[in-house]
Every structure is written in structure tokens, then in C-alpha cells.
Image 1 (cartoon, rainbow, N blue to C red):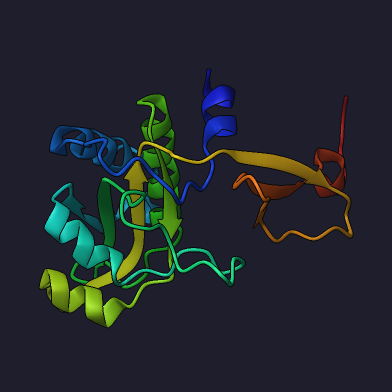
Image 2: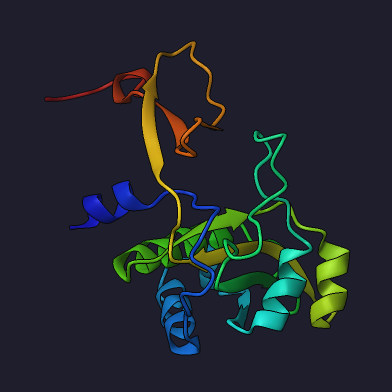
Length: 193
């Protein structure tokens, strides 16, 4: 059921690094994104896929991992993603990418959860360094990086009051807590039954 997949889909940042993700899985996830909505149907997104340990290490070094966890610089060796999908905007196709990359990433994450995987959408990227590392041509904008793997952490949703803190945190047992607003706090008005 879609609801179950969405509820299981969290931002995972620690993985079983030795759990391999094959190229066919990455291609299947991109195929899901390819069939998703695109502003004006321009379809300007392109993808770089990596399940290669050396390339993964290069990508990893360009990423910021958890802004609210000030004392944590990212997953340690052995807990790093098994694969990455770099989402690019092709400026030869469009000059505006709208929200296409958000739609694509969410679609791929739902597909990943369905396969027993998890991931994290990362926008904190040293784009210049990543572009050099992967030799990305100038007509591509690096939009997002999707880190993927078999989750090695528990992510728990906590519901907050309207004035509560939205910053995620980890407890002493390493459980990652993600505060979410309650449904009644985000619906402004309802019309009808």
C-alpha cells in the first residue's frame, strides 16, 4: 500500500555499506522518476548512477549530511551509502527545472523503500568539487544527490505541537527522531464533509 511505503520512507543517513546495490536497481529507480510528472513536460533531468566504491567515495566527500546534528560530520566508513544517484538539470533542454527534481527524488525513494532500501535527498553539495570529480559537462546543473543503501539506523517520527521544535535529533541509543507537525495543525480550512 502506498501509505505504508510513504510512512516507511525516512531520511536515512547510516547504512549497511557492505549491502550491495546493483546498477539494475538504480536504473529501475530512474525509470520510475522518468515516468513522473515534469513541468511543461520538458523532462530536463539527467542522472549519474554510481554503485562503484571508488566513485561513491568521491561523491561522499562532496556532501554535507545533517545540518541539525552539529557534532556529526556524516556516516563513518562501514555506514556509508552503497549507491548514489546524482540528479542533474540539462540546461540544453530547459533553463528552469521547477520542482521536477523533488518529484523525481521522492518517486525514487518510494521505489527504494519498496525494495527494502532507504535513502536521503541531499542538497548540501560542494558542486564545484563534485563536478570536477565526476567530470560533469558545463551544460548540467547539479540539483540534488540521492544517497541510497540498506538502512542501518532506526528513524522514529515524533509528533509536535504547533510551537514545538522541528529539529531532528538522536537519542543516547542512536535512534534518529524526526519531529512532524500534527495533521490538524497543517490543515488551514476544510470545505465539505
